[in-house]
Length: 142
Image (cartoon, rainbow, N blue to C red):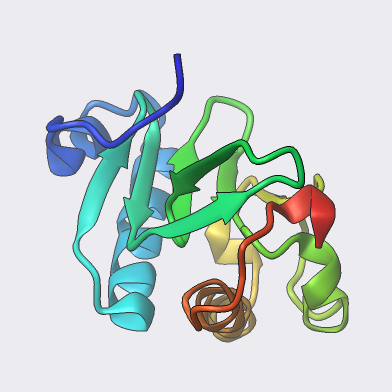
């Protein structure tokens, strides 16, 4: 079954995050993403707090939708989703501070150790790319 938007309350979800650091970071990211996107937070699946939406289509014809910006406070680290892929932000990420990456994921253990202005610019650029009406890929194809 495909992941989709739910009616779960994102504030209640954040309040229930066990780790105080992840809860604090979730609130910071919530404010940052809401400011950057102008979109309200919504739950996508069981653990992603998403802002806005974009649609994608694979060459096979399979298509779907995903948050245009989003994050998930996970046990090991907070995941920030970059739909256009982390490679598009290499130069900026060099100045972010401690982090690791996946194809479309940025993993942050403590937002107090990163440059939030850099993070905000990364989210802003990713948001602009996936919401300009021409982006129809997933991070792996970017």
